Amino acid sequence: MAQTFGVNLRGVIDLLSHHLYSSPRVYVRELLQNSVDAVTARRLRDPGAPAEITIECPEHTGDGTLRVRDTGVGLAEAEVHTLLSTLGGTSKRDELGFARRDFLGQFGVGLLSCFLVADEVRLVSRSAAGGPAVRWVGRNDGTYTVEVDDSARAEVGTTLVLRPRRDCDHWAEFAAVAPLAAEYGSLLPYLVRVVGADGARAVTGDGPPWDRVPGEGAADHRLRLLEYGRETFGFEPFDALPLEFGAVGLTGVAFVLPAGAHPGARQAHRVYLKRMLVGTSIEGLLPDWAYFVRCVVDTSALRPTASREALYEDETLLAVREALGGHVRDWLVRLAAAEPERAGALLAAHHMGIKSLALVDDELLGLAERWLPYETTRGVLPLRQFRRSHPTVLFTPDVDEFRQLAPVAAAQDIGLVNAGYAYDTDLLRRLAERDGPDTARRVEPRELLAALGRPDDDTEVALARALAVGKAVLAEHDCEATLREFDPVSLPALLIVDAEGARRQDAAQLRDTADPLWSDLLGQLVDDGSGAAGRLVLNTRNALVARLAEVRDDALLESAVRALYVNALLQSHRPLRPKDTAALTGSFLDLLDRAIGR
Ligand SMILES: Nc1ncnc2c1ncn2[C@@H]1O[C@H](COP(=O)(O)OP(=O)(O)OP(=O)(O)O)[C@@H](O)[C@H]1O
Image (cartoon, rainbow, N blue to C red; front, side, top):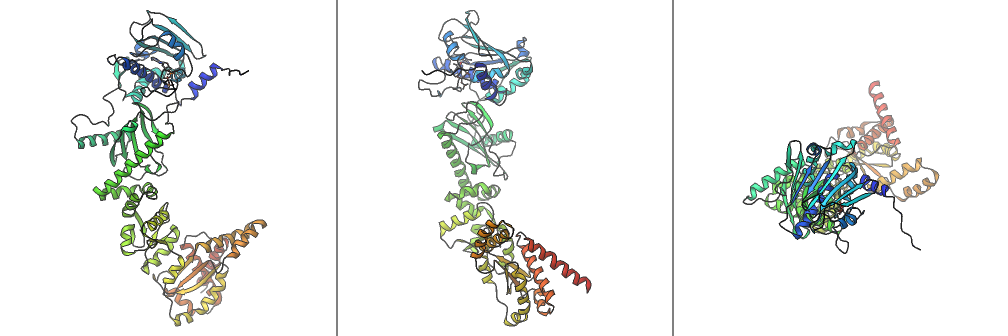
């Protein structure tokens, strides 16, 4: 026979009240929300009914309690049992169990948040549907009492009373409650007042601050939005984009950050659901690439999690995210057309997000090409400008490789673009897909070698000996020496290592240190390749290299070639292997010794 689960009430209440919510502060929100929903329910039947919610703090009540009074729909005796005293019991779901769109609550647990600050909650209520007034007392051990007392309350509505535990006194004080009520409820459509020792303070105002007030011009509205953004987020917005999506009942405003935000920075949006604040650092409202935009929105379509501290990740949230992302993107495209200079500055400030979007969006690809600055051999330029002088964009997918090759490439008038930062290589590949394979191509280091001139025969003969000695020395480093004449003359040697060669070098290094099993495997990798991994290109235009022709002492030649090799290796920013470090120390000390000894 099927049996039903037993429930440890105290445990469940403790779980829901203490572990669902992140802070006791939310009890203000939950009580406010219940009163708002009660007023809404009453007004659905009687649009002219009063709509007032008053929170009276202990400074006003004088007996240490906090009271929340509303002119809502009230509860009859039977409802007190089924709704108020039943965990998960709620009047805010329809027959099919779906949350009703008019109401803020839906889970039937919010009232338990009172037990974050009090052990007992009292309530008196009179239902708009008629019947006598009722008193209810609920305790955190899961017990409650109900009594009908028609004299308890004359008007329709509800008053909830709680006496904070001694350690929670401060949560009920006016100084805590008024700011909390204002934070959560300032946009609520009914009058909400908090009463302290000095009288009442209304926390609700004129509705969403982003709404255009009657008679307000577009320019004034914009200035007001910018001011609101400044106050809310503490930065001077680059721009403010009004948001309005009727389909998901969303209104609000998006603020664009002025300077570069970190792409990994958390998106922190201020989100209201049906005019009640959900949180000030809600994530996931915009696509990741739009990390430089912060929104304040109110929506009726999104769902909160049970704690009401985050948004439920559902289809609607996906649709909202896509719609908001599209809006920001369209704004960017419009800005680029109307105010190109401004757009350029903005794109440069947020290039990471724009680049990631450009990978999947042709229009943004165009903007990125036109505006985003790239490091090139002709200086820092947008790609479109670079392409005017170099129809084929040759790029290096690695920053170090660019640093090493750029001076030589520039001197030969070969245009090179540094595509070593995030998204750059993929972006250039997308350009090539869009405009044809000749648009952009990864430069092969050996290609650069082919562009460097060969020295004349006399120079080759004069340096043949140095080259022969160098060959033996460099073989230890899996490198070959070659003579070329090129600019800049100040550069004695250039080390060209292709990716495949570098891989073999790494494998060889590992093989020397790895255990036998790996050594075998790595050995195959190393043996697969043909020829040396690197090429030390000696610049015959350089005076030092030219003077190697006069050196007769082989030991000195060896040290000189070693020193040139290590110097070129350091310039390429590649890591030094142990034998490279040994070559650096050995050649340096030998040359120093010779210099001092002379
Ligand atoms: N001030 C009030 N006036 C009238 N009815 C109320 C009041 N407060 C609570 N209730 C009734 O008690 C029920 C349970 O309230 P509770 O706050 O626990 O959950 P909820 O508001 O339905 O959902 P949620 O957990 O999402 O807040 C409500 O659905 C409502 O019917």
